[in-house]
Image (cartoon, rainbow, N blue to C red; front, side, top):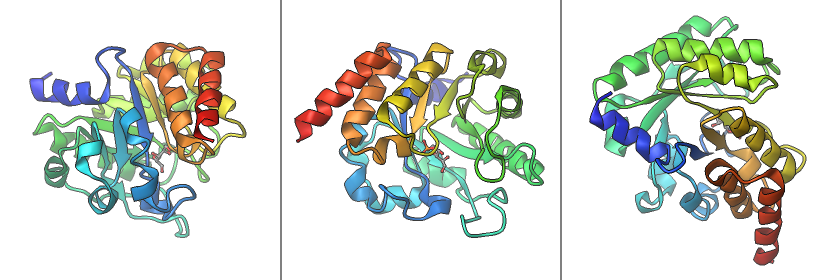
Length: 265
Ligand code: R5P
């Protein structure tokens, strides 16, 4: 692996723990102004110091984010469909690698929709990104989509989708936590991070999921809604960070969340 790729990955994965606490804020590329992220310029700055990488679109970055507050960027490079359109899986690559380099992204990302009529197209999008980004030693994050078309998926499906991303050339993969996650990690070949998905009922539920994923060998998390839809987003990202980087227990992290939330009042 070239020095440049290793350097970019070391901006995402903290060399001290080898893990990453990413913050996902890219939802607007198909969901528009999602609850809690209507005003990125207000929502993101207090969270940025606790995120190793921000997963975002170029539009959100250029319009709302001061480059000085962000440690690294994982740039969302796909898009096309919207939540009110006919097929969320019908994505194209929307952002060139040149533009990703102008933004100084540490990685670029697109998602695969394995098991849908668009699986070939979405896997081809990932391959295109790997080929193009590879010219500059720019790492690629492959994302395995679930959602309304695919529903909940078990370890067998997640293993399949994650492994396909790695075989196509993704440097790391983002997927969803599931029972049997150790098997997902074991067969992935590359580091695996988990998305948070829809806001869970309690903060403790989200902390538990992060903890279970890390215990099963995940290389980090990339939570969005479970952070910025929390009543106390800064307390939440800091509590999650303690699990990812400091091996905090769920009880310790939850206590941290409650203490920080109380301090805000
Ligand atoms: C989907 O819009 C994006 O890929 C998000 O980055 C991903 O779903 C993680 O965000 P959340 O934790 O809110 O699911």
